Image 1 (cartoon, rainbow, N blue to C red):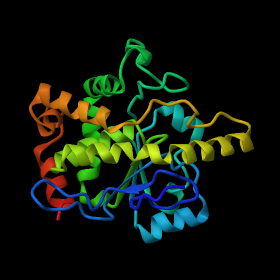
Image 2: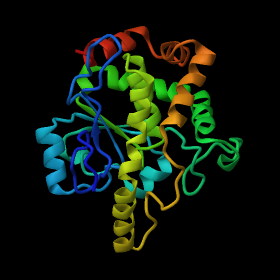
Image 3: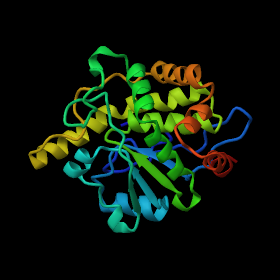
Image 4: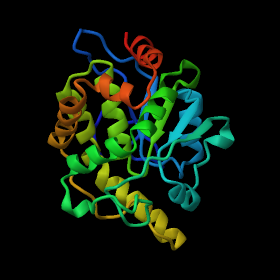
Length: 252
């Protein structure tokens, strides 16, 4: 178990966290209880569902996993509880096993984590912008976005969002690195479910190390090319109105 105060304790997801409370460079903070990040929500107990729906008030789930992952593991039970599920697949180039990858993508073993992430941001920029557009619309909030481990695709979306609203790179990178604290328990939960069902675990034992420097390098790489994170997202098709909605709606 971890002692991360941002973690929402659930029986299914092990990496469900509130992005609220992070400070911005101009002295404000993100509103609590508006945007959450998570690992897969495919397996949730009745008490998990009750907490997420009735206590947290989540209205929308944004599922970043590939169609193959969703076909195998499902979107989870929140849709049946009245939560809107939006499937916004982002290909995970860091895991070639059982996950769809672009056939001409560079082999992940030949690249650093930050290089893989920057490749994903270059190739699937419109998809990342689409996720942020969903989060920006207040009718979708409170919202949770997730992938399998809540690490790579989810980590990139969280970094873009936090950076866009003015959170310092060090804090953004530290939020990304928090997932490392949850990986042992997360993997154990997934493996236990797989063993019980005689199937593959959604999150395997092998994964790239999660460190803050990798996310710092990603943010620096985007700025080198686009000037700002806002510049990157505008270039990918995110509307200025959505950017303003994120900043005005999520920061207090």
